[in-house]
Image 1: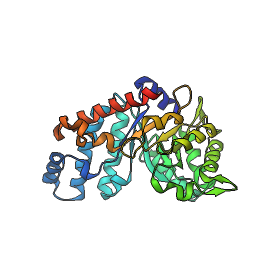
Image 2: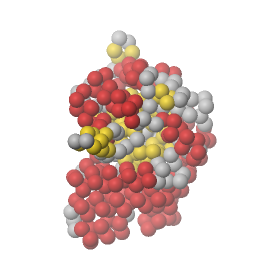
Image 3: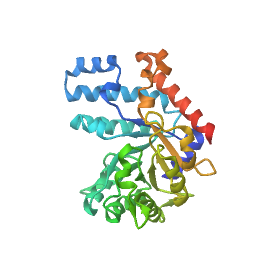
Image 4: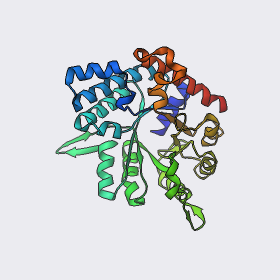
Length: 305
C-alpha cells in the first residue's frame, strides 16, 4: 500500500494530505442552514452538513493530492449518522482515486486490536461472506499496549496490503509528558521508533514499509533523529500550518530522495476561506479557497525539498 501512496505523491508532486476534520464551526452558514432546514436541528442534519462540506472540498482538491485523512472523532460526535458520513466520505474519496488514512488512533489488547483492524482496514467473516467494514487504506495506531496490541494491525497489513501509521512523536504541546521521558537514558519516542522499524521489517513494499510513523512537524530536531532511526519508514506529519509547523521544520522528515513523508493539513485547508489570505473567495466559494490552499502548501513544501 505504501508504494501506491508514493506513486500518487510522485504523480501529483505534492506530499500533501488533506485532513477532513469537519467541525460544524468550519462549515459555511449556507451549508449548515440548508441541511438543518431539510432535517431539522438533529444529528442527521449535522451529518448532512458535514457530508455536503466534505464533498465540496474533495471535488476541488482530489486531482492535486495523493491522500486524505478523515479524523473519526469529528464524525463520531454525531452518532450513527456521523459514522455513516465517515464511511460515505471514505468511499467517495476512494472513488476519486485518493488514498484514505483513517485517523482513528486505535490500539488495545490483541483480540480487540484484531477487531479494530478487521473493521477499519480488513474484512470480517459473516457466515460464508468476507465483508469490508469501514475500508480505509491506512489507519493511525496507538502503540501504548505494546507488540500484542500492534501485531493484529500488522497482520492485516500483510494480508490485505494495507498500512498503518504508529504514533511515535506527536505534534501536540503536551506530547512530551510521556513521549520524551527518559528510559535507560533514552527518550521513549526513540524506543517506540525502534519497535516501529522492527514491526515493519516483514511488511516492506519496495523501499518503504507498510508500517509508518506519526512524527509531528512541531519538533524538527526530533524528526532529524527519528529519520535516522527509521530510514525505511514513511512519516505521516501533522502540525504544519495552523499548529505552527513550517516548511523548514519539515525538511528532516524527508529522505534525500525527496520521499519519506506525507504532510497533513486540516483546518488550514478545509477552513481556508476563513483566512485573510483567501478571504477573497468568500464562504460561497470555500472549495476554491481550499484548492488554492493546497496549491500553496505543495509549493511551500517543495521549495524546501
